[in-house]
Image 1 (tube, rainbow, N blue to C red):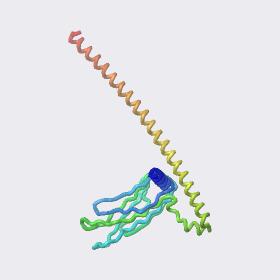
Image 2 (spheres, one colour):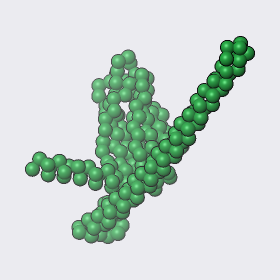
Image 3 (cartoon, rainbow, N blue to C red):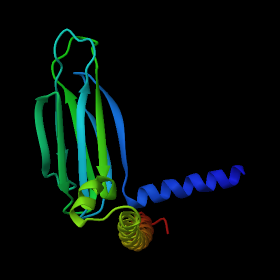
Image 4 (cartoon, rainbow, N blue to C red):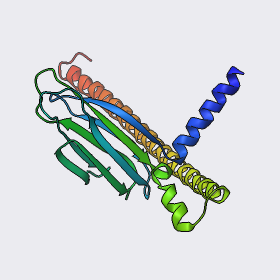
Length: 210
């Protein structure tokens, strides 16, 4: 029973990762540091997020700044000194997307809690709006969700295959370079040894020791 439960949990996590992830996280922010979250996302994937400060008893109204960048460093979202915000974009390239947050001026030792609701892929779709637009519900809507899930899984599997091939090619290229460098180092050592022997022989002959 334990193994079945563990297997089901692993399968559920794999399905969640392949189809797109969603979830809320809390960040503790202070004026001393910037906190960032990163996610590796393939191209042509919808990303949506909402963030807001969890207000508590603070002497002043706290604010937060946010910046989201693409793998190539393009700024996709930038906000300064806000209490809440949101961003949405469709990824143009595959890679690591970075979302960074930092607090405004706070009293010494004071921290604020930021709630971030991050949705990627299928999790970012508004199924209620789709159902109203397409005039579908019930079983038909579930079938549409399953079709979208299957496409997402297929796309992610292809992405993983391509990435694995790229890593394998890089590993093979690195091994070839290391082999050539090793041979070059060996050739240099042999050449230096031969030159040293020749130099010693010349030295001994001049001194008439041999």
